[in-house]
Length: 485
Image 1 (spheres, rainbow, N blue to C red):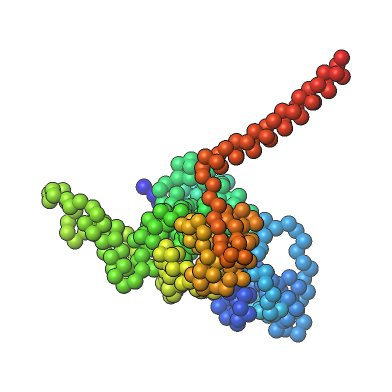
Image 2: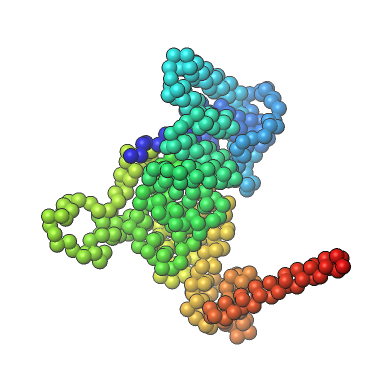
């Protein structure tokens, strides 16, 4: 039986999103300061607001007349910090307050001294369990206050002295969240591979499913939507990783990844008709059907009626995933889901599937504004996502015709002929769309080679490469033979 996950409370990834939003929009950092004060985050405050090193204090603004200068930290860092978006921002978003920093640092030192005392007493009078509990408290403290390197080192210390596989997996997941918090993709990738090895060696069902969500989110950050889509969509019905993101955020990530990466048949089954997604994105009737189970079970879904009443499920039993209690009793629960307007996302899905391309382009622009440009995981690759979704819309329309009028297609997408011409030209030049544009006659001609011709061309191409290699090898053998002679 799976045990409840440990080390799931810190770091708070919602705070990293707040830092991103504040840096992006240049808004007042009240939420950040409140969190820093609440969690006593002296190292994190220094990283953000220090006059010479602060990520959000580029001109050295201080609330005190003479801040204490400290030399930059030149030592190598375990985790690289990439929390602030790369676009130009206001130079001063978070001013340095020396008195606040000193107060927070003193609080941290008191907590660390208390934990050290607890560990010393455990070493003298208690057993390994009490010693590990004290060390775990230290690791969680460093994760809570935002000291990334010390947090990772403390977690590693606990990991080395732990023999329970489930606890080891929880520790590595906590280390992954430290990497996600500070935006270090390489560090996250390395530890996801590490967690995967642990899970494959005998991890329980709950931790296996939690890791699936972690993998999917990481793959989104590195633009591997084709690999992220199946993982995120599979996580919808078994999601318990509230320490990673909210359920509504998971729905957004799953829909975006599925819309871009899945083929039309899979897109229909796993996104358009998925009851978990309908419960969030659907209209009133669809939400009711998804939440009551009609969209996924029963006669309405095409299931045969059960005749054996003695073995049948009671009439008042529910056969659908209850989205309001998803993950109850396991992991850190979301206190409340943030209010999100899913209308642009719902419109994107329905317009793409139904071939309403003008509405699709409008929805795509709204999704970029409301989701891609606001989320720290999606922001970096937003332009690529929009470009790939435009390509998907073009491919979907063109695959049904041999010749399409340029002006007619431009009208379908609600764009000018010049824009469509330039946009298609980029994809044609990159061999992403097999067609040609005839501007004289104002038409687009598709060139869809059949599979046999494509296979023949591939064989000829690979055969030529093989012959060239054999010729080079033969020349080298003859030269060596003449040298021996």
